[in-house]
Image (cartoon, rainbow, N blue to C red; front, side, top):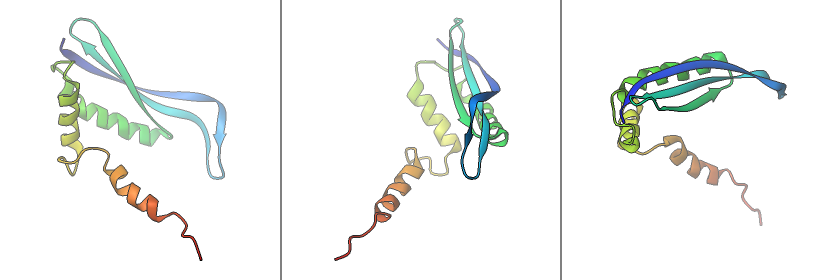
Length: 117
């Protein structure tokens, strides 16, 4: 089955109760719902979320930019499509995601308090 088209739906989902922190009062979650429509009528879906309309809009623009990579392709070639999309956005396309994870782990170890004797 081929992916016929990618449809993107920006959504704002109100929270049942506001999420309050010392510096935030979050009343909704902005979400980008993504549908992959197969040429046989099947529809696959996924989503990404952010706190804040501007951040969600940035996610929406990214998804819309990646859509042509998926359209017309074999829906079962998930790894190849992911790799192609990753290479198109990564500054270091030969590395596997997430570059944040690989740089974060050594720092996390160094943040542990040292024992004093």
